Image 1 (cartoon, rainbow, N blue to C red):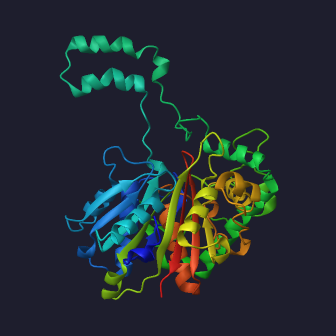
Image 2 (cartoon, rainbow, N blue to C red):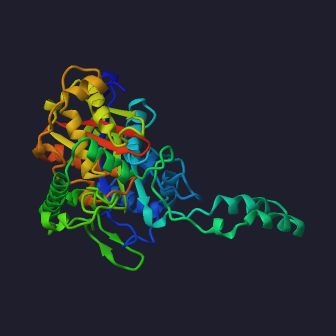
Length: 433
């Protein structure tokens, strides 16, 4: 992907909206990913007063997709009764799915395929489907799909033994290629990059403090909209932010992924439910409709690494690539927003960006990418405090940074996201005057 400005047609971020993010199996237990996506998209359309007929398509990101309706984007369009001609598709790139959806929409607009798109993502861990043992599926699927006779049932019965193989297993968020859960991979990264427990807890505390300050200041009021649950309760704000957290409290938490480990529930992002939506338009269309664009994508980049190496190091490779495509250096960037899967992962990536040896061995360059100014990093907190609905995080980050650029008059923001499978994602946003 090259600089948007070279293409002569620019996609712009007009606005974003999201639900409050809450801990899985709490307020949103009865709202699946589609319902959450509908709530975020409806809030976006209402807040921008955009007529439904103007929406040409939806690009949506998700990780835990409902098996009965995996094209969540189209279901959102149908549930909202948008124009039947509003096309939609759903993308998945693990935790980078939301950013993938937004950049896919931006690319489509820049190619001239559409003028108005809604892009975003949603996930509901609370509504993850429990998988039946494959042995049971293989035994009964022919019976369910055909016209079985009693003899067919008798033939299927022996396939069910031993019965202990039929007990549903607890879902495990593990890498298919390595069998390692993400926290175990992050624990290895912490040891390899010499990230201490104290540094991780301090980073997590700052995430909570900044998120709490942002909420208290009203900075999220342009992007977070209340949700009424099926039980009639209103959820007005993110539920995972701990304004009263302290280093002492964090230090008392037990390791979560290894007996002598450093990762805890306090310095890791939690399983979260929520949705985020971003309104993208061609710049010409936005101005014709009377909107003031917030920001535009100057570049983006995606990359992959060997999951058995350092699973979550992707942003250390993708962010330099996005900077190069934008023709910028790290020192030119006003805000850096990095997804906080784990404090250990963010701190590892920051070390990599500041390392000359990493630059030579992994980036093919003589100089380090640079040190990230802590005052410019995750200025309103990140996934540890705000939560991390897998498919929604990218759209949440785009919205917050676009609003921040417009609010402060600063020029550029760099986004970075790690994802399962050893993937890394990055994007450079620039303010639009």
